[in-house]
Image 1 (tube, rainbow, N blue to C red):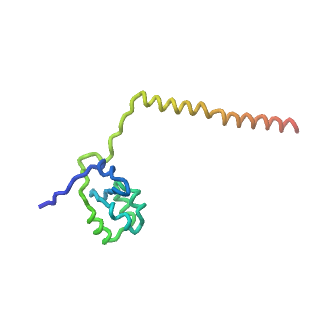
Image 2: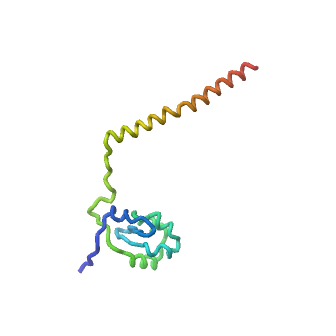
Image 3: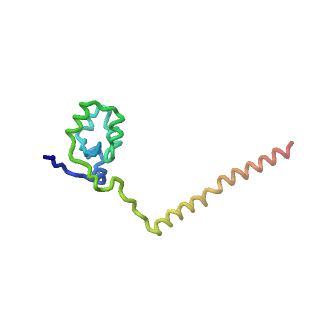
Amino acid sequence: MPTLTKLYTMQEASQHNTKEDCWIVIDGKVYDVSSYLDEHPGGDDVVLEVTGKEATDAFEDAGHSESARELLETFCIGELDTSSPIIPELEISSKKEATGYYQKLSDLSKQYWAVPVAIVGISVVVGFLYLRKK
């Protein structure tokens, strides 16, 4: 008889991304490793880099031992719900927001054109004066 486990979406797992509430997803399983962070031999920062994310590649690349894999299983709280999309859908911004962004970009490009033009202008004047002296 199959064991029933709680299903979590990637979006749910991604919300648990702090040192106090640290979930990782490895091979389709969700692990709450918050209590293990201080004991992790590689330091808590390597785990925090992948918290709330799909961490299978990082876990495999680290070359964990069989005992580490067994220890990981003790932190399993459920499985990843594969029926929901792993990558969240992009939100489409309104035209008003988009034009605001492009307006800011346009303003910046208008502001900073003077510096390169001034450098070129000064270079031309200095070059002209140098050639005139000869």
